[in-house]
Length: 215
Length: 222
Image (cartoon, rainbow over all chains, first blue to last red; front, side):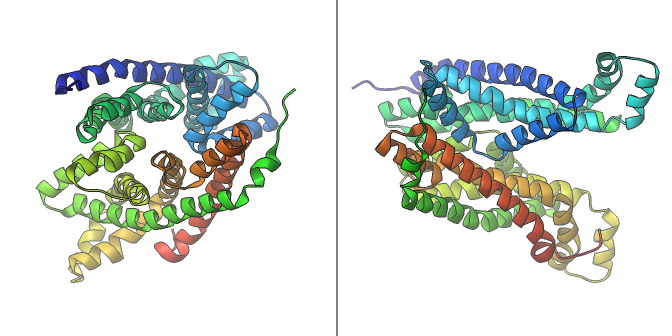
């Protein structure tokens, strides 16, 4: 039998942490892009688009992320695609992130006074120009703190990808715990690693929030 | 051509119903317990001794910055190594309660901080005891202020309980998994379970927003 030292455990967990970070980055960037696209559609098109996007948001916020992951995993397979856990997790987390981000950002855009839109329009700016030069610079400032705060939720969400067999920090923890018979130590270390990753981001988000309140 | 067979899933309705009952039951027990912890913790963070405030700060930040599934695994797989063994249902309940307690504490704290200092002082000058000041004067408007956020958090915990199936708590997602292992209708089984979660979430939000002002923090002019 192989004896696991603390260093063996921590080293393997650190190696797995890469995949948690990679999946978080993909989900956050992909979700940001999809979210930005949805936000633009929502602002630019009519009431019907708003309702469709509202339903999209409700669908992702009103169902467990775990179910979304399962549906992505089995749904893609149903389409005849040979999906890896990677692809399914990336897809589900991207859509999940986009639904939350579009809702957060919509709130920030709504916080920009109506008069700003009207003033921009009266200067004969096109819709794209209104967004780019007038609305987004103001809404963007408000959006930074909650967006950074949401990154923590994305990172924690990637832990669920372990359930469909993606080997990231949580899955690696489970495997090492089974092999080493030290579940208390291993899951303790897993939790601390997540904490080490998330807590600085939480603090940074709080710091940003404090700054925007003073302004 | 993809053929869907939802009837094969719905034919297993007793399993689905049992799963639904477990999900609801866990949420119904974890919610009041979690809110109790949240209230006690928020109160202690507002006017407890410094060491207790620090300790609660550590509790809140630890729970808020680690995934629920890791907390669950730590309780269910990790704690038995120290001799604390428990059933999966108990572990699920503890994890959900502690989780809601931590998030709820932070939400409630924001509501308490928004209470003007003068209200504490006015209540004290009326010779109310510290407990009375908190439960009668500070807590109700604080709860009212943060109730929408608290409702969202309760729903997040309910949806999060889907993870508890991973330690073989027989809740809704576990039922879906069991059904798909019997008839291989994985996509349909998870669609049905997902829709059930969605219905639960929408109903719970309506119910909580209705019940809050009536039973929890009392009706008052905002």
